[in-house]
Length: 226
Image 1 (cartoon, rainbow, N blue to C red):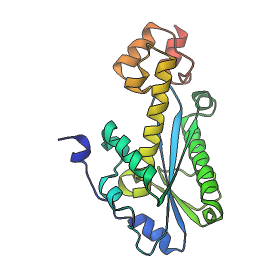
Image 2: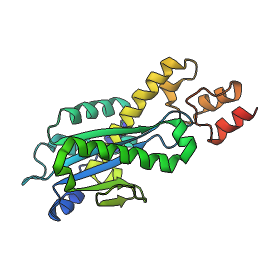
Image 3: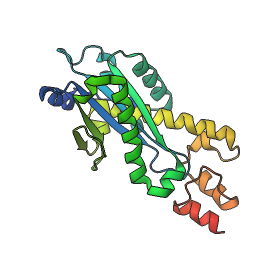
Image 4: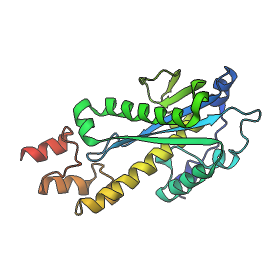
């Protein structure tokens, strides 16, 4: 059984409905990808859904198939990414913060910056209606935005728009790492996406880090010191 079949679930829009019931026009889900890697940017995506009389209208197929990105195979993530791109009810955005900024401010603060960037872009796309929006983010922290926000631990497994954002962030970041694979051949970025796999750690022991490595992450710091 494939991983995405084993963990399959159907979202109910329960969180989104509660926010719409408080007279918000939009719900914006936020999630990140790439906090754990030793190389490359951290990405955060925002997925906005507008209130309708029948909340599930236009989302039926996605409610059946979207899941936390960690529970979905790479091929299925690409399929879901395309489905969301074609869906008229969703407004999407992705913000990325570079490895140099991660080293400067730390990974948590960089994640917050990526989320803030994604929200600002969503608001630009939505227009004036964006002022009547509430954000739901995956985690136990808050970000620096003027909109109301709700933090939900495990939100990518509980909230549809957050799970959708997790798919967008993961696909966008993986694609970025595939591009870096061509720029820095020999590092295997297309395979491990910068995560500390056995292959990646072995390479760091044999050669100096490349420009997209996060210099403040321990295995990279140790490699630079040798």
